[in-house]
Length: 358
Image (tube, rainbow, N blue to C red; front, side):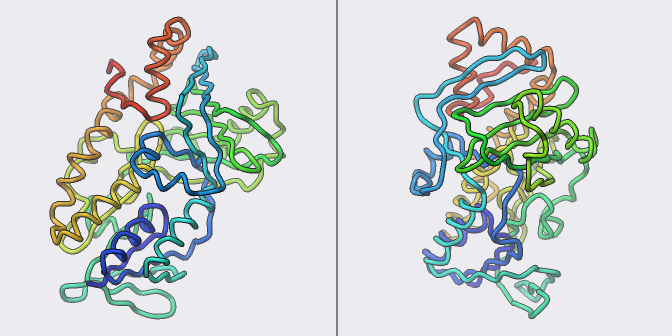
């Protein structure tokens, strides 16, 4: 079987590695490599526990402290006995792609401009040639060109907008999160090797990118004591935000095509974490394919991933209510029990089901 994977991010590269190791012929298409992204690049504890090989990446920062500020400017400091790792996405994505190539996958550094049905398979057209594959996988992120062929078309309410950049020469030994009073989102500071990643996310439609960049500059001055001119390599990105019932309907596999990672809307709607879900969905799809049961992929997702995303989605609106966040922060400041629970959720040891849904 020849598999064509559109997208060389964590989901596409890890899937390619698994399938190539299983004896399948795999081609990965991505014209954006190497690349960076405006995300923080943090991997939760559930990611490093599920995929311990990630600790082999040399260029990373280990964090055991997180400082969280509520919309009312109340702070609580959270700790973890086990570190979460923060990567440059260029470093992480390139490392995962290299593992796939070492297993025998082929990489085409080209843009796929058109995908068509061809009998029982697919043709992928790039600016230079046409490739034929038996199975098509969309691992091409929030703006997936493969997704419309497999699942429903997404609307504006299914996305968040994130802006970000990097501040060179700024050092920190903690993650900082500041939740906004008027936006369903937060400002973040994530330490990386050689710089910190900063960013701000909000619901798509609640603010334009220009407005979010202005808010980002305000946050840099107020919470980081940093002039915005020091924030370089600025980025804008869409992040899937699966909050609706339709987002959980089986639609990640159809015929001989499937979706993984952000393309499949497998993202934590509250935190925006996607790397764990990218790797996990790739692992589940590889299991189904290598077992000769592609149709079982949706069932595996329903058991392994959907419950956690649903729990977050059910709490999405109440979580970003300033009153809820202010109360939760106050309780965490006063009670070590509440603080430990909130810390376990923030670092990824526990899920949102441990938080009440208002």
